Length: 239
Image (cartoon, rainbow, N blue to C red):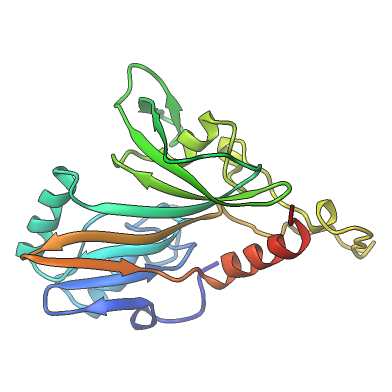
């Protein structure tokens, strides 16, 4: 669920051309007929009518997203993305320890009719660089740098390395339970134990690019749920 705040609370940076927003999880980037919730685009256009999303994040993914305030800025950023001159870093909590050291995963991705992706040599080539930031007994915090921008790219590339993202049940990730980490944990016998983290544990951490001859870098803090999840892993899942 998205935090009970308003669009202006999510703004990291604003100038006459650009909005940089820390998108909460649970909000679609574009309008979604299956959800009554407003999208990031519709919320941005209530803030400024000319707003255009420069890229997308999955509904469950939180983090930094760029919104152009005019056509010229939108066009310039679109060219930067097309020429792969935008550097994006994501942080993911994987459902296992990992040992990535600037590891390149270069595998083609094909979208299916079921709104998921598969590794398929008939698909479009995609590349992601992974680096392990922190290991726990049963999990790891991984930095992900996508060099291309395919649908669910980070998720499927991690799954291909047997390192699915925690909570990403679509691609083999597990829902983490406190009873699996904490010794002598006791849950109420009257209710089912709830997962520690109830969405895909993926956050768009930072973005860097040069716009109108100015070098720009923006970083989005973790949302509360991911901050708490990592805190609990450091306490109960430490090596």
